[in-house]
Image (cartoon, rainbow, N blue to C red; front, side, top):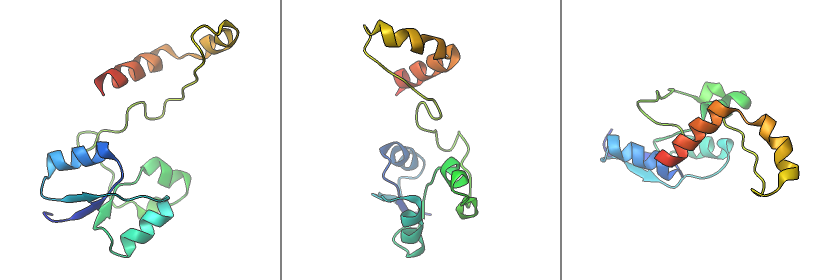
Length: 116
């Protein structure tokens, strides 16, 4: 609702929240998941956004009250992609990295970064 205090340190999330509801206020909200949940419970904010994948990894999914769909909140670019890099002229390392490249993921990440 209007006037709600939303805790997030992500400028990307803040921009998307304000685009949908400019009548809320986003505040800088840092700390590990346990710290942010403690701050939420203490009433420092009305809500926060946490990565569900992280909650799953830590067996803390009971804290999720809602999972946002892609049309509500876009994920960070390259979410889930693993990247390796080296100097462009380092042929010794490149010969090991080239076979690891997944073309479709490389293209998706390249497009996402260009969009950002």
